[in-house]
Length: 334
Image (cartoon, rainbow, N blue to C red; front, side, top):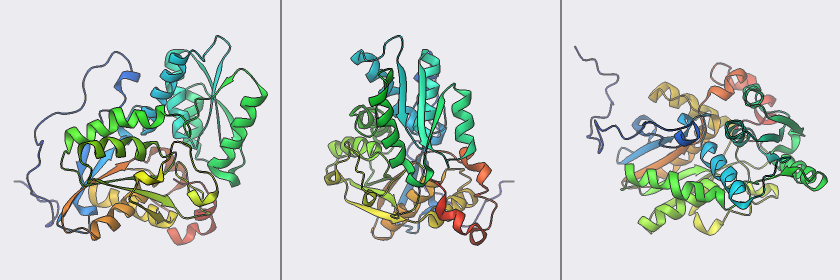
C-alpha cells in the first residue's frame, strides 16, 4: 500500500509531471553542462499560497553552477585568441569556479592555476588536484578579495598567465542569460521572483535580464553574507569590492544572511526535502523564505549553487552549531 511521507505532503498537480525534460546524450562532458532540474520544495516555504522551486545546480558535472560560467570563460579566451602554446589560465576563486575551469581545461588540454583563500574546504583542494590545477594560496583572512588581489599581481608579473576574470568578464552573465535563464523560463514560465546568491553577480545579472525580457514585473533578489563574515562564493558589497559586471539597478533588493542561519537552512533542506546542498544554498533559501512571507501568492525560483559534497569534512550536518563557536565566523563557508 502507498504510504504518505507526511500529512503536509503537497498533492497539487505539477506542470510537467511525467515529462523527462533533462538528461540526454552529449559528445563530451563539457557539452553536458546545464540542463539541471527544477524541483518544488513546499516544506521550505513558509507561505502556503506561494510555490517555491529550487534550481539544482549541484547536478552540473563538477557539482556547481560555475560549470556554466567556466565554459563560457574558456570559450571566450579561445575566441579572442588570448591562449597561446605557453599560456597558463589563472583565476581567483573560492573554489567552485576554479574546479570548473580545471575540469574544462583538462578536457581541452590547457594548463591552469587557481588563486584561492587558504582556508577553503579540503574537498575543493582535492578536486583541483584531481583535475591537474596548480593551487596558489591567498590569505584566508582576506577572503575572495585577497584572491583577486594576488591573481592580478601575478598576471602583471608573468606574461604567461591569462586571466578570464569572472568578476569583470561579460561572458559570465552571458552564460546565465543564454542557459540558466532560458531553462528557468522553459520549466517555470509563471515565475514571479528569482533569488540567488550574490558572488560575482553573474547569475543575478544574466538570469535577471533574461527573466525581465519575458516579464518586466519579475522581481530579482540577492542573498548576501553579513559584512565581515567569510563566505565561499558569496561576498558582502560593503567589504569594498564590487564586481564590474554587477549592476545594482537590476535587483529589487538584497537580504543579509548569517553563516549560522545559512547552515540551519541547509540542514532543514536535507531533513524536509531530502536535498543535499551547499552552504550558499542555505543562505538563498533564507532569503527566499523572507520574500515568500511578503507575498499574497505567486511562484519563487531559488537557485541552489552547489551540492553539499565539498563541505562534508567540516561536519556541517553533524556538529552542534553552538559548539562550532568561533570556527563558524572565521572559516569561509559559502
